[in-house]
Image (cartoon, rainbow, N blue to C red):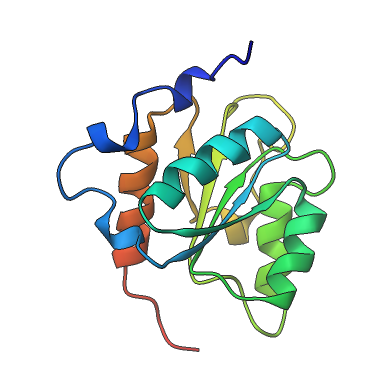
Length: 152
């Protein structure tokens, strides 16, 4: 029997507040987490709102995919075993094409765990603390998608 993590078990997509999730339609979102069941559940939820989700299960896998194709937003676990979320963000920021348009860290440890020290260039990236409700994730993504971004 599969146990659904508490931060993903707040109800089905159709139980969210009216209007929430509408701005996800057609958006390309990459979900990066080394826990396969989390990427699967987040993919399922965001796909219900019409998002086109790409999964990556490591920082290195995400880096390779992001260098090959652009996305509208990256939802990334801060603590990955090979290349941390902040490390991934730094590598993307240092690349000639710059970072993805929008980046959201999700993390279960803001304290003394590995990856808890965020490099200065990733310090301004929004984060969502685990456990969180899927509604909160969707709202955070929509808020980031609505933000004006400077042109390159």
